[in-house]
Length: 235
Image 1 (cartoon, rainbow, N blue to C red):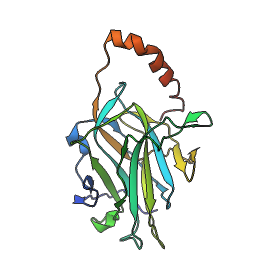
Image 2 (cartoon, helix red, strand yellow):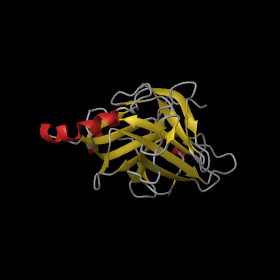
Image 3 (cartoon, helix red, strand yellow):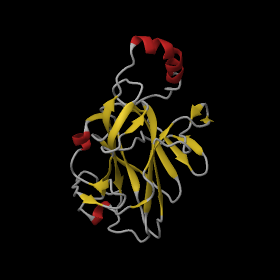
Image 4 (cartoon, rainbow, N blue to C red):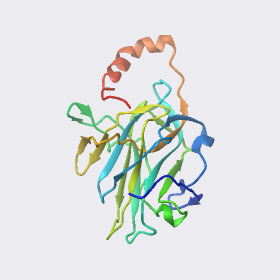
């Protein structure tokens, strides 16, 4: 794998309107409610055509829900250009699907957010680095998410020697994650790498105010039940 220490990002819009390679922090859209973009492990998860990879993450401030105004993650590619027409689809998914080894899977049927497929250039198309940041500006239409959800990525159109992956970071400085990852090649599996496999991701937004004591007492049992599946070791 190429050295990832030198990272020069150049702002550049491409497709899908809200998606950009950029240098600026997404903190301009609010406060970080999740941040795992500080310590690069030097590893990446390789993306394959039609296979979805997911990172289940937990927002930092404790709250029943959050309003997301932006999010981003880092991608890696050694290619100057792709041979194929590489398309990427990104979703934020609730973990309310059927269980896998006792753990609720990401629910593709009810996404919290879905970008639809957009053309993905390589970082080297716009700068001299093999790592770039894919950013989603949701400030005009914020997305409501729970504390625990999965950021999922799929690509199609890889051809020949095309290569792209998700850059991995550890540990998170705001919020937490489980260090493993979801993979869907027809059905969901929960997998572990030889080291933590957390996406180099950031989420911007604000926590929804806590409910009043009266309303909290009415839903306390449901909230406690929901917390029971925060189960895997956080990193």
